[in-house]
Image 1 (spheres, rainbow over the protein chains, first blue to last red):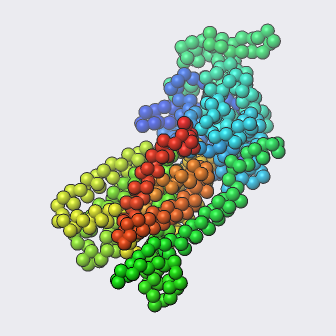
Image 2 (spheres, each protein chain N blue to C red; image 1 turned 90 degrees about the vertical axis):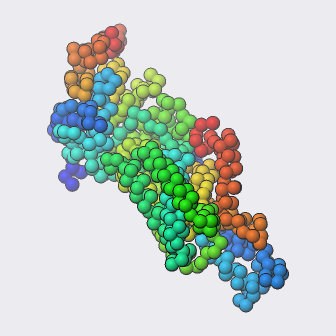
Amino acid sequence: MATEQAKVGTAQAPAITLRGASVALSRRTIIAGIDADAHAGNLVAIIGPNGSGKSTLLRAIAGLLPLAGGNIEVLGRAPFGAARRSLARQLCYLPQQTELAFGFSVEEVVLLGRYAQQRGAGFADAADVAAAHEAMTRCDVTHLAARRFDQLSGGEARRVLLAQALCQAATCLLLDEPTAAIDPAHARSVMQLVRAQCERGAVALLVTHDVDLALRYATRVWALDGGALVAQGEPATVLQDPAVTKAFGIAIHVGQLPSGQPFAVPA
Amino acid sequence: MSGFVSSATPTRLTAQRLATVLGSATLLLALLAVLAPLLGVTADAHGRHLSLLSTAAFDPSSTENAILWVRIPRVLACLLVGAALGASGAGLQAILRNPLAEPFTLGISSGSALAAVIAIRIGVETWLGAAGVGFAALLGAGATLLVVWRLARTEQRLPAATLVLAGVTVSMFCSAASVLIQYTSDFSEVSRMLRWMMGGLESMRLSTVGWAAAPIVVGIATLIAFTRELNALAAGEEAAASVGVAVARTQSVVFIVASLLVGVSIAVAGPIGFVGLIVPHAIRGTVGPDHRLLVPASALGGAALLLICDSLARMVAAPAQLPAGAVTAVLGGPFFIFILVGHKWRANLWGRS
């Protein structure tokens, strides 16, 4: 299909397009008429108070929820109802919470990310092992390879799942709170590696409550409130937008460290 | 890098490990299957003790040889029914993401028992023979699975919690209905109903085995074809969908095929409990959770367990025979408690100690 050629590298066509996208769960509207674009190279941080629809928006873009109105396109096609296997080669999704049944090892969990690339019985070949190894190194979980996934700490499990998503080798990364439960140093390296993916032509949408990480690493910020997109644009501008202050009920202060490095904290 | 590969290799399933484990399990099972019909002492009409572990068993005119030919279909039926129960238990536990699920949790056995009870009550045996009850049980299993599936399926999804709830509800309804029918039946009908519900393989014919072989082999092969998808489902429906699995199709196919496997095995041998629950547990604790190995190994393990239980059922009270279903239950209960209490086992099965 034509969409197969639509590489993310092309700057003109947005990789992810939302036009009047609305989502309802049990007939309650969660997302109402969102218009937004994300281009190749963008690292979009989605912020907003609890219940503002961030995760629902991400799940809709991942094709896991039907739209109540409008449309969403990921690399030129609607994700909901698309064949999951071919979609998985373009788009990966890190859920906010994952509970794994049965005692799979960390390496087995990461290799599950290669499902869409594998054929036949799906025994990991050299390419799969190499991809898994690279993703595990980048997420700093290589030393956990032989451990049981369900015995990891919350932050370790999060990094393993991120490694699983990365070794899917997709160009659209949808990450729901990738840094939740992760210590500050690892949180920064996670954001750095997502940023590096984007600089190599990927597009990432990530939900976060960490406004400082959003300011430092995101190229754009989308702010949600009550299911509507109330502000979008440059991180520093959006974080100080009156609509964002109103949404959180608290202002976000953007300043500069003595080193010249910008930072953001709830004031 | 080489350190990583060598330390992590044992945790990843390779074609070589799959072949080694399944190959040696198949060999052991074949040995057991050859040995089983020869074991056990029986007596002829004159009270003379006969052992099949003698050269007489090879003489086509001897009583020993005749007994051997009676036992062979029974062994084959054990292998088929045990394999069907083991594999379907592993498949159902995977789609429900619950190590406590088993064929009987989902109402399939109660539904087929209700159909069998109705069949006995209305006298199906008089015009169709014992096979008529088996056929009714299969129909009952099919009808129950359709009802449970319809009840549980919402918006193209088959949520695990709803499926268990629907299964338990239907199971309770069918059990209650069976009890009511038994209450209104006469003594001889009730005794035949109870006897059927104990499950057993005593009077097995080669024709029954032949008829059950094709659906069971095809069913197990279908489950094996979906084992990669079952692995991905362990992380949840959305996580599986995002790595590329067609979740609803996997759940539906595995649920329907596993239920039909249970239905066929009930039609052949009556309801035989615990095999579908215990075997996948024990295998998972031994070879790990990867379903590509777990499902076929559970089939082999189920076949072995049922063959052992049925041979014991034949031998412990010889010349009287116990129902194999009673033996699996009597052995299964304590074994399950052993699993629950054993710390090491519990850590392996649930991940927390």
